[in-house]
Image (cartoon, rainbow, N blue to C red; front, side, top):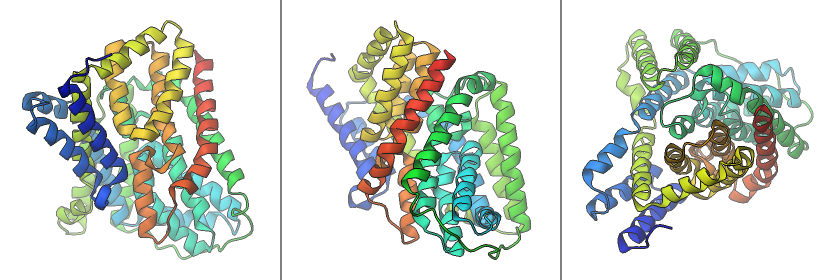
Length: 419
């Protein structure tokens, strides 16, 4: 147990308040303000030397680059109606069947999450799905829930599917072959079980017929380039991951090149495109890196690492317990800081790969329990509120309390079977 000095208590208090601000957004201020405020307060009070804080921020370089690339790709696609086109295609493919429309939207969410990250599904696909539901005159909430849940359930198909993956592995991802060997089966289990549960829970609203043959504007030249760039970037990242090269720089270069190329084609300033990107996620992540570094300096993460190291004597039990525990903790403090803490503890404990894989499943899938579980679900809530819909904490919990534990048990069980 770390010695309970004034500095330790003050550090814990600042970290707790900053994390609560990120989750609760008092006064509706953006999440990044609270994370940065906590980090700055640690430095100003002398609890964190400026040099150490700078080193903590620098640790996230590959994560920042990855996020920059993905946000630019997503915003370029959104600005040129790529996701609206995809959603309208799904409506027409449904051929008037609401259950088929639900299946197609869910499948689209799997693809977008897998190749563009869960944040893209939450931020960009969700408004397009809402528009598709209106065109089809279908009940929107089951389709919107599909976007929220698949954003987390499919977020460990590939290393690029969730920024938290880079965080947990400290920016050094396992080779692609090893990744697929560990997570292909658990991902299938997570996706299938989440679909089955959501389909069952929302069965009364996923019935009957819907409109078909809705108007679908053809993709513009910029939209075609954006779609091609997304596909090319996904292929590039699969190759880069297979070569065990960090993902951040290739992703950033692909996103920047796409944004500049499409803007040049349309003879528009790329600054207009960049202005619509949610840049606040970068200082949010940087602030969280500082907060976690501060906690590490108090010894609390060493205590977590010691617990993991002790439990690792029985890897199967340790994997099941740690993965499940982190899944639920992610809903208390959000999965990004939870993943950062787990990453630091793993670096110190060096547990078997089975335990690390279970922790990743927990930090990725756990947030399906509640709206506050991940940045993706928070962004999803903001997106649907802009469209005039809302989901309360309890309404989400009623779905998540069934979907998350069952999918988590299936995914962890599949990973443990692989040994």
